[in-house]
Each structure stands twice: as structure tokens, then as C-alpha cells.
Length: 454
Image 1: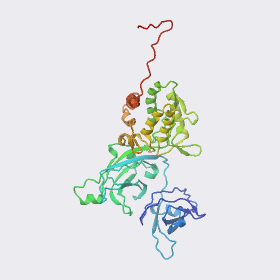
Image 2: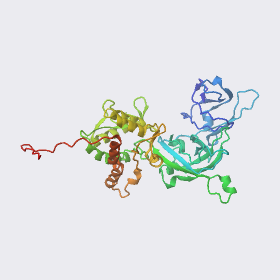
Image 3: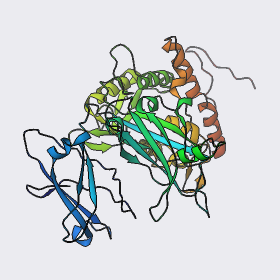
Image 4: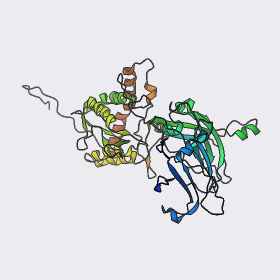
């Protein structure tokens, strides 16, 4: 996509292998001015290598138009023939435009599937999913494609982060269609089935309402006993929206604490009793930092790299709320740098401990409470299983008291989160052969002589 006035390259789509009818996912956001003529040129190439130099690839055709021409077409959908190669029909390009809503939230989601149809003769299936946003004229526009998971009927796809307006343009009730395919090397992917949902449904998170039957309409018409071609389950849906908006999990409600603050306070008020100076380093992850928008998964909540310590739980909460005003939340999040930060600190105390932490969490995968509580049994590193399961995940929503008694519900949360720590500590010490220090001598009040019986 280029501007014809100065032939400035605006952007490139992704490459789609082995197809004459590509449906590109990548979108381009342009400022539209009704009173101006905004010339555009679209060039298509057949990619032959990884070289970014377009002269190294085969030219397939081009098309000229204006942005106004696209916007002014019926349903803002423009079909025009490609040209640029004398005496050859180059095919057709289809362009769609839609005014963007004001919603600037992003959502991080993860899905898995169960018992999908077997499509490969010598194997199972290589499933992937394609997400489509519904348009105002009833058509659908592709907005996301997952990776391919090879040779399985029960895939677990990686989590992904997508702007909410790409899914539904800010209309939470707009239909989202999801198609499931079996990937084929030649590009002729086999259709497994489809289902529909909405962002409002997905935003509920993991629940019985977000388990979807994958249905193949042709099979359903032909076979009376046909039920479905498998199911797809939402494992995770997190909104990384503006903390000033109620749709965000970090929403700064002036009348009550958000879920993160409640969890911090509930757990922190108990563990702080085991720290002598009540000074805690508080780290954040998954944000763009000022002033240059650098993405960071390890930054001090108080903004002080040299001294990330906060005074007590109230200091942590204050730093957390202050950071929400200065950073821009960004996903997908990566927990590993924070774990490594803690590991480096522990290294100053004992080498053996860091080995245990390393084996527990040597992974750069995004860690999410909802997903891990259902998927991870024991974390491994480079094929070696962790010695002990020291990861405790609890679904926060299970502790939200419907009567509004947050004090009682947060007490239950803290109890379940911390319940395994004493046994984990003792099992670690036993596994390393570390014995308790000798008991100190009994306390003798001043002026009293301690008598020892022989």
C-alpha cells in the first residue's frame, strides 16, 4: 500500500502461502479527510524469498484509487481489476473500509479445542482458527488467524492480543464468526467447522458459556445423527483497556478497589508480617513506558529503577495506582522477566534456591491465572520436569462475594493462595538436607541468674 503523491510505502500485508485467492488479515489505519483527494496505490507480489527487496519477487499487478473512492463505494467495499502487466488479466482486488470506533481497549485471549474432526489420512489434523468481524452489510472481514498446531485433535493455541475494535469495532454485541481449518501444505486447507460469538460473551472469561460447538453446516444437512465436529473452549480473556474505563480489569473506580488491588491487599497484609522492615520491591510487566513507549515486562511500579521498594502494602497500592496513570497497558504479557528479577535477588542469598526457581519457571511464555490453573500440572524447562509444583493459581472470580462482603471473600482468597507455602518451604528444606538452626538459649530477664541443672 503506497501513497501515489510521493510513492511513500505505507505498509505491507502478511504473506499467505500457496493460494490464488488470499484473504489478508493485516489492517491499515489511515486518517480520512472528506475534503481532500487521498491517492493510493496497491501493488501485489508473489514472494519468492525472505528478501525485503521487492525487485527480488514476481510482480502480479497493481491498482490505483482514492481513499474516498473506497469509502464512497456501496458498504465501503471496492472491487477493481488489477493491471500493470500489458496483455494479461491480473485478477481482482477487493478493498473494505470501516470507520473506527473510539474503543481503544485490547483483549488477550487463548483457546483450546477438543475432539476435532480427523482430516489427514496419515495423521490427525493440523488445526488453526480464523476470526471474522461482521460488517454492517452482513458480510465478514477477517481479523485474526491463529498459528497451526500440528497433528492433534485437541490443540491448545497460544494466547494472542488483539484490539477490541478489530474484533467488533467497539460494538460488544456484534457477531464474531470463527472458522476452524485443518492446515494443508498446498494451501487447500480443509474446513472443519465454525461457530459464532460476540465480544460481550468472550469478555465473561472462562465459563460454561464460552464452550462452543464447532459445526460443519454441510455435514449437518447430510447426516441426521451429526452432532458437531468438536468443541472450542475459551481459556482466557483479559481486557487491557484504559484504566479510566469500566471495561478494564485495572479500572480505577473512585468508590472501590479493583480486583488487582483487592488481591494485593488481601495477600500482602498477611505476608508482610514475615518481613522485618516492611519494604517491598514492587514490579510491573506488560506495559509501554514513557517517554518513548518502550515495551517492558520488568519495571518498578514507583518509577524508580534504582530503588523499587515501597513502604508496606499501602505503599505498593499507591505505586500501583500511580503507575496506571503513567504507563500504557500492553500485551501479550510476559511474566518471566519479573521471575528472573526475583531469582537474581535470591542468588545473593543462596545459590540452591535460584536453581529451584529456575527449574520452576524457566519459560518466556505468557503466564495467565485462568489458563494455567487449567492447563499446567508441572512446569518443565528444556524437557526436564520441575522438582516440585510450587505454583498456586486460583480463579479470582470464585472469591467475589455476591453479597458484597469483600472482607470475607478476600480473606478466603488469601488463605487459598498462601495455604501451601509452609509445606512447600519444609519440603524444599528437606530435599536439600537443610536443618533448622539450633534453638536460641531461653530468655533470662535482667537481674535473674539462669541456673543449669547437671
